[in-house]
Length: 270
Length: 105
Image (cartoon, rainbow over all chains, first blue to last red; front, side, top):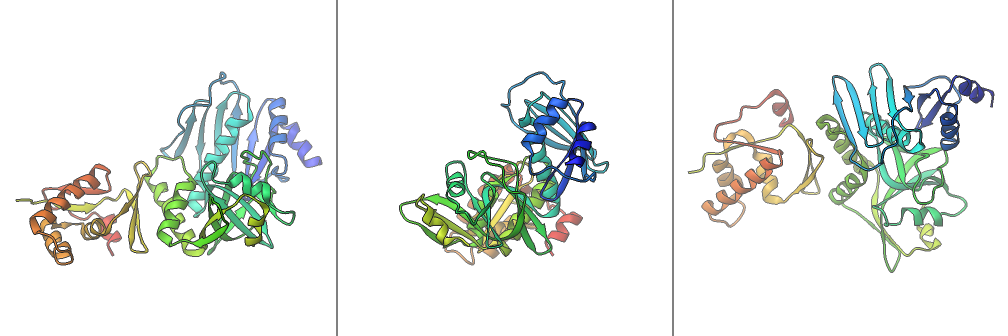
């Protein structure tokens, strides 16, 4: 891939998730190699980037514990956790990340940046597995242990897995699109870099029988909101995310999927 | 005698869905679901109508409840919602700001 080689010569690559290309610049070839491996399948092949980050790897090795802090000051987002500190200025489309050389910190920064960008566009990231079947995308949301990994593991061959952990939801005109992500969960399998219109959201629960029950919009919205990833302490963005969840529930059928963990559950999907 | 005024906070997002009011705090993203009485109070909280009048007009007329009891419950509820910054409570009328005036349209 000549274009990728050209990027590597400049110690730079473009990670494109959900159709949003983000350039990452580094001075460390080993770190670049690590990113190439980590985001394999999501590397952009053009020079175009919506956002550009310079990564400084000089931070001392810290723990990953501690709360995430995301605040907006004077038009600039400040992102901070025990293992990274980042700034991003949307107007200039540029930012900096200070971290220890590891793939987890920049992965978290990218997730946060995507939540901020999506919120402005009416989309969101959600704790949900997602997959495409017969040209339609389905989301399977729930807390840890609800069955996201199980649903992903049980998916038959005709299903394209977008993610087993973090679903990427974009609003496009009056419909919602699910996009593949490299954000993995227990299955540790990177999603396919494809997308499709969302035909249904299932809120997962394990049970002694498999059944699907449509949910009223109040319950659906509450449970969807509980599964949306959002880190910013910012009233304006909170309102946007709230509105996004309400609008999503207005347009996409939401059901409770109680299931026995075996492959027959997929007979009811798609 | 109670002379409280209540107004919806501007730092929240709210929507009525299937008859229940969902409100999300802009301060800390906490989600609240209001019951029927709290929803009536929230919707009537224009900052200019005394709470006493809201209770008499909107609550006592719909529920079998003593006015004094209803007012006390409404005050407790209003102060609880104010603690979460989803409602403002004052002993003076709370004039509408442009954003709130727009919201109530």
